[in-house]
Length: 79
Image (tube, rainbow, N blue to C red):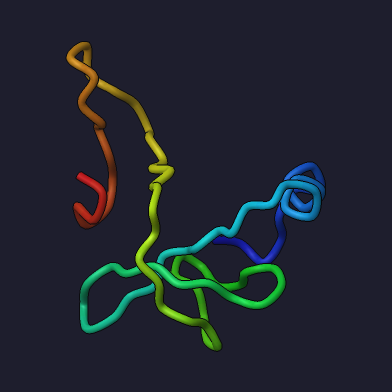
């Protein structure tokens, strides 16, 4: 996460009835949380926030194999 969100996404968040959650690190494991207003923190969301269990996941991808497997980077949180 970055402290700035592209203006087009800010407008989307205001116009679409969608609630987004962001990654947080809790006891060494990834969880998701909601925050009031725009998120801040990099790479994890910083408090205050409320931990939630998302219904859907939008997972970032660096690239994908020919079989559709995500080729990620990092600590394996999404892999």
